[in-house]
Length: 610
Ligand code: F6R
Image (cartoon, rainbow, N blue to C red; front, side, top):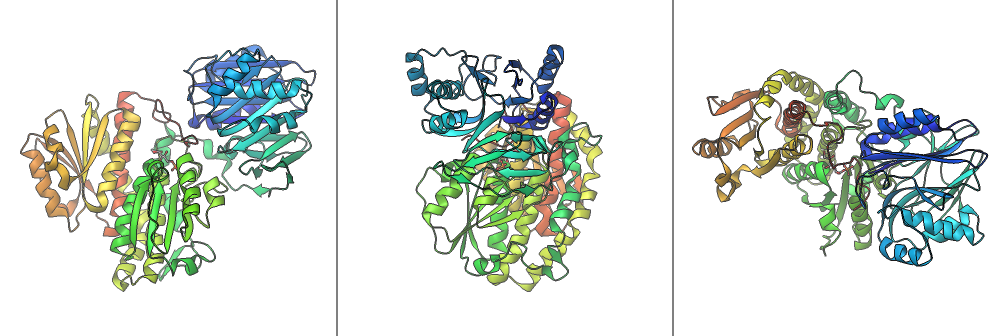
């Protein structure tokens, strides 16, 4: 959500900032801006609404220069999408600020600052940061101590970077609830909200902790904790691929990421399973001791990751004999819940920075869960650092806002977790063997499934003029139907709902007509006959259906029912396999509708505000 880049160097940093913004654009993309400070103290600001390219074009025209600079790509929270609301925000042409997060008490701060004579030129909460720091600076403080004092007055979440025109040799940064990472260079240092932004210039990173304030100059980084005490934070060598920001010849990141799934799932499995099952310490040292005590699992996540959790519940209860609840993080954190004895709290997140999921983890710690595990894609992210155990999904950088490969690797992780917890809870030998064998076959099955793309392209034409759609599934395919509906609404803007097909006659059947395409996921499993009855209920009401079915499921297509063959697969991996055609369907519908597939309207990757 929004992206921040900053640099303190000897060279002109403008290209570093713009490249960083482009690499972060998937996080927020309604407007962008840059502020540059020359050693002479000359301060330049350029802001544009629209994509980062608009800003880059404007910067090129201005010949902008600066060896210290900050930049931002915005996803609007407070204040509409206008140039005046784009960051950086200034105070008195002296202080420049970029900010991710929300200053929740900005209304009272603003009223105070206006009373003291400050004039606001935007509708944002961020501008209060600029004026508050300015007020501290004019009282004679250094930029560092001005920021340390200012942050004490802020409630809410911030990752913020601040420059002072009178001191061009440094930036000061503060983190609370919104991630920031310092990039270490040779005679130059950087700051960003995500390491992705800085990979072209460094691989050495320091992830700031909650409450940290840091002062960054060309040669030095000084970090202070929430109490103002100087602290050392670990320097981490990143192994994230530098070219992850590349589309590799695909038209969109989303299509590239869909097609990467066989490879990343293979990576997720590598060295973690062999012919006998899980290898040693797959979930980290000490995990086995924790798993041997687990009697209940509570899963917390948002969006697509929540759908992975919903699927996992079917597996954990069916195969591993472990009771499991799954809840949306934003609900869990604001209600009183009962903690079962010996409960393992599992968070799932692509980014590891989702504000609600992180807050839920922190709450769970207070509530006394036995232990916490995160299933996450971003090493060094907040969830990874704050959980007792972390399992990395190894999907690689996911740039498309609509999550695809992160989801299928999360599901792969959950099948491995099912094996691990099942081992401690009386899983049958047959189930264990069947999951291991299914996992071995998974990468190849995913490749086979992607080969049905051309049929789906044709199908997509039939959705382009539709306004509503219904997705149906049963059992562990119900969350997959939900995920299919989420993908379609996110990138094609077609209203899509998902139902467990057994629920049809309890209401949604009323919606069925020939304007409402019904998408059904139908592997050949023990629920097939029940599902077929539901399909007949739709047919009897004139519904038009698109059934993604196992060949052996014997659906007979006709005028009202199009059947798309999905390769046969073993039962445990069917939810992963059936996800792919639904991702492709959404992608091709969006393509036909001409939407911005990778950066759909109103959305942003990594939701770091609640
Ligand atoms: C949907 C999507 C979102 C995310 C959700 C959680 O395609 O990407 O629904 O799944 O915002 O994000 P993470 O997984 O980063 O916690």
